[in-house]
Image (cartoon, rainbow, N blue to C red; front, side, top):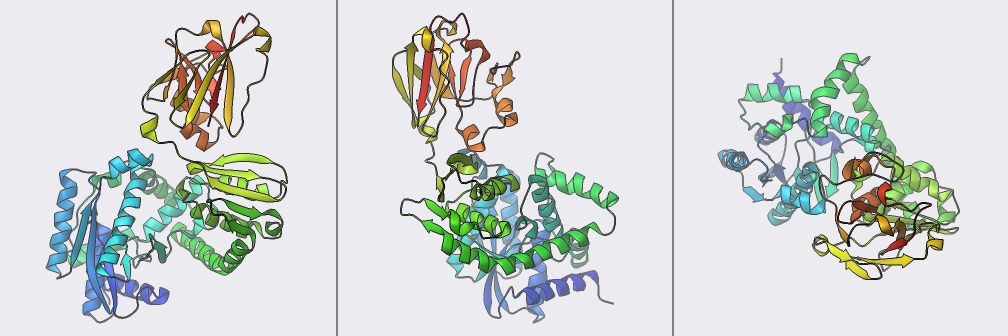
Length: 475
């Protein structure tokens, strides 16, 4: 009877052959973190090559994210030693994932993934390899499906992790997708494979860890039938469906989408109306990719909003995650990326006096005292400016314009209790892009306006208002 180790190696070889992941004579960079999964992949592929089941040349690539101090450095040394012990070329680099996350307003997980893929792709090019191999396994696929279901996703999201995909211009393959974490542990124990433990894999602050350690075990206990098998069948069915409609997506994009020299994407409404909603969702996804939108911030709600805009022939404008604007008219839909504010421009607060204007990063802010008869004029809100009105006599001292900071509190208009600004924005039903742009107008005592979302109850105009201050923000 075959041992569990031989069974896993056979499963890997069979999966690679079935999916055509590796042609004979290819050069393959193995992405090895030092953890159990990647060390099992390294051992299994080397053994398969020695047995003649795989014909390829291997090298090892490692990215040090510098997230765990001395442990991260020890991981790198460990992987280098393991590559040397197997006689394989070794490539490595160090990146500051935490700084990159702060600078780009990403989660640590997302920042680490972006940098890892980018640098692994460069290693592939430097070594002139044909592809890189990642150690994603069956449990990773299940966790990915659950994560996307909880976030909201279309059927492409339910495809899970693909056996092969092109990222950063490089082909990445996943030889381990048909083996489970339990099988990998048994394999490492039988083959005496050593690995490094990453304590962050148990940190409940990360959504994937909560799914892995809390949600998935509970679902296994309560599910009827075989949860893993059902989810894997769902992913495979969705992949087959996507492969069938992909030609329709490509054809629809060519027919309906015009890529303008200034970066705008114009979609012909008439050409889109006869296309099925499933294909439409994928055409919009391709548009967002062309605009370099961070698709991890997009949910099923955003795609539904885009698809529904095709059947609503009226002028409107709405904003989507990662700075994408959508404008619709009777004949077309226009998608574009809004200019991003340079954080270095808006770090320092500026003072705004009545009757004057100031420049705050990309925004020009003006303050104007009005006659009391104008105080009932509604606030203007549009794509190019925002205007609000305040009781000038309720404002103490000069007005200061600044970026938000942790701990900011104010009493939102219509409420009686103060709220943390961050929590208020999280709970409000305001477009994601506006939330990211929000900044503060305050006097010496209180926040007057969380621009452009909500003014403060303590500065609103009323029946006794004698002087009105109008503040307008121009983009």
